[in-house]
Structures are given as C-alpha cells and as structure tokens.
Image 1 (cartoon, rainbow, N blue to C red):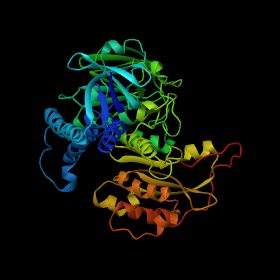
Image 2: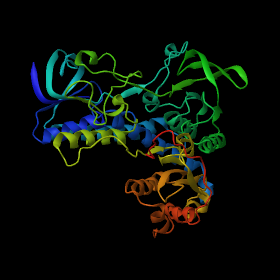
Image 3: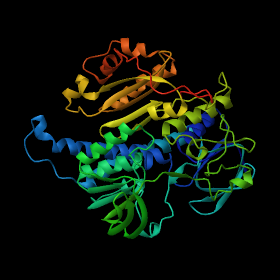
Amino acid sequence: MEQYEILVIGSGEAGKYLAWTLAQAGRRTALVERRLVGGSCPNIACLPSKNVIYSAKVASLARRGSEFGLDGEPPAINMQGVFQRKQKMVDGLKQLHWDRFRSSGTDLILGEARFLGPRTVEVSLQEGGSRVIAGERVFLSLGSRATLPDLPGLAASNPMTHIEALDLQRLPEHLVVLGGGYVGLELAQELRRFGARVTVIERGPQLASREDPEVGAALFALFREEGIDVQLETNVREVAGRSGQEVRIRVEGPQGAQDIEGSDLLVALGRTPNTQSIGLEKAGVELDSHGYIKVNDRLETTAEKIWAMGDCAGSPQFTHAAYDDFRVVRDNLLGSGTPRTTRGRLIPSCLFTDPELVRVGLNEKQARQLGIPYRMAQLPASAVLRTRTVSEPRGFLKMLIAAASDQILGFTAFCVEASELLASVQTAMVGHLPYTVLRDALYTHPTMSEGFVFMLSDLPAQIYGELRTDKTVSTT
C-alpha cells in the first residue's frame, strides 16, 4: 500500500487546483484520473462548446454581410474546419494541464479508483495492473455526466450527448434536441446556424424553465426567428431508429400524439453525478436521495477526513462554482484567515446563446416564491446605444431592488455582451453596495454598461410581491 498525505480522485476544476496547490505547498499528493486530464471543462464541455458556438456566430454574421455593407456570397460551412479549430484549442489546453501537473509535483495516476475501505482505493491503471493507495486526507472531485432517462428505445438509438455533438465533423440534416435547458439551447442554436434543421422538445411550458416567463418567451421568439422548431409541453413516449441515420420520436403534446422524424438525436436532459460504482459505501461516504454526496457547508462528507467538491457534491453545476469549492476547502485546510463555507454564495449563470442570457441573484419568480417584496427597473436593450452600433438591438435588462432599501436583489439580462454586464452587478452585490452606485457611475460611451445609468435613473416606486413572515430567506 502506498501512502500519501493528499489523495484526490478526479482532475476536474476543484480537484486539479487542490492537488496543484497542496503539492506545491510540500504535501505528498496523488491525483487519480480515469479519463480526461483537467476534467470536462477544457476537454468536452465549457471551453470546447464556447469555441464552436463562436464559429456559429461568425457563420451567422457572414450571412448578414449585406447588412454591414459587405457584398458577395457567404462562405460555405466546413464542419471539419470547425472541429479542427476546436480540437486545436483542446489539445493546447491538454498540454497546459500536463505541464501544470508536472511542475506542481503532483503524482498523476491514470486509472479508475474504487474504495477498498476508509481513505484507501485500488486503482485499475490505464496501462494495466493496479495500485493500492491510501491518503491521510481524501478529496472527491468525481464530476457528473449527461443523464440518459429510461425511455423506450432511447438507449438503443445511440443518441448524442454534448460530447459527441461537439465532435461532429458533418452537419446533421435534422437534429432533434431533447431538453430546453442550457446545453440543449446552446447546441440547438449553434447547429441551426451551421445550417441544420433543428427541433427542440421541452416537456415544460417554457424554455429555460428556471427563469422568468418573459425570458422563456424571448428565447422562444429568438429560436422561431432563426428557424428552430420548438415543441413545448411535450413529452417523449418512445424513440425508434438510430441517431446519425434516422430516428423517430413519438411525442405527446398540446396537439396530441405525433411522430417527429430526424436524422440525429441529442439528449440534453440534465446531469447525473458520478458517484456509483466507486465503492463510496466502503469509505463511509453517504449519498443523498438524488445520488449526490452528502456534505456540510465546509464540503466535509460523512466520512472522517474525506471532502467532496463540484458536481458530485451537489454544488451548482458550473466550473466557477467548482473553483469556489476548491477555495473553500483550501482556505480551511491551510488556515487562511476566517473559516470559509459555501453559505450565502452568490453564483452567477450565463447561457451562451446569441444574445447571451445572464443572471445573478433572484429573478421575479424566485422573489415571489420566497415572499420578498421588490421594486423593478428594466430597460429594452435597444435603448442602449451600443446595441445600435453593432446592430444587435434584441433583448432587455432587468434589476430587482429591495422594497425597503437600495439593496440589489438580482439582475437578469438577455442582450449582446450580457456576460460583461454581469460582473459589475455581482461585484456590487458582493460588496453590499446600493444600486445607486451603478446608477451614478461614469461609464465609457458607447458601452453596454451605460445601460445601468438609464435603467436605474428613474426607479419606479411600485412594489411587487408580498412579504412572507413564515420563513427566513436569503437573497443569495
């Protein structure tokens, strides 16, 4: 049995940063990774998807050439070229990760770990054979995978997930997307802009179900304008055929039962934590009813000296949330000042459609559910002159302000460059600054940030929602 001070299982965002940090601090550290060095983000998720989405935006702009005074036919789409650009970036990121592991002094072990007992694993090595490794402290960064529901014929149809969709070197004739969440929406618009016919099937009454109804309506209008068929309140009953050739999806919706036929099928119906088949029960690590590892607000599991971070611990499924999990664990281990927890974190989100959809803090739906009265400031994106210079007037900005103070409760924007607006609002909220700081700031002209001035200059006095006193709530 090999002994390490630090044993990390999984090289995702939280796991790799913790291994690098503790190894550089002089702790004898091993990290076990079964497949993707660096985790999903640089290999098959965040960064590759945004790379391909940008290629699709360029294709969309090329088709609008005459609008910008450019003559000539738009260039043809070369899906192999799209793939090669993405893969070049991924290969560079892989090399960066290998270099970082070497320079940090982390013992990177490629293989699949399974617990034999408390803080002890057997690793089936990729190269053959096995190693038994024990850690004084163990950290789980197991990640998650695309959920494949138990629908008749779905598994047999060999559907794509985001992984296969990002590796496409051909253009699907007709892509059918199951799911109207972040992954489904981003990839649906991307492949439509490359020229595929696209149908999105969503079982709920709107796209982006966690957002306000006006957000769902805005996305629906965008997709309809771009030629994407969206089927809302529609349930999949059965799948037949094989993705990549011909598929037939039996659905039931407002128009009754019907068959939707396509060439390819993409499943984007959420995530499942990678917590099975690793022997966590032998380590004394308990799971909740959804399969996530039970942790406290310091990310400690039910087993002594074992922590869990990122998706597998039920944290919000964003790379930036996993990175903050790393900071929570790191600071508590190294005794960096005040003990750090996950309580009250203000975690932003961004849907990288075009235009982008961003939110931080509460939306109207959540404020009403929690019984938090609010005032609301809103502005059409077209009122911000920056949108006129780039011919992107679609969308809106919306901010919720506390009814009895100038506290910012939440911000939503669906507009060009929305992700850049997000940081300013989040910084103000983290610093507990009143909305008037954003209103009175002097912004460069013409930028999207100028929109804060006009949106907040005449805040309506009307108060929405009703105060509830039956529970204690947090605006974060």
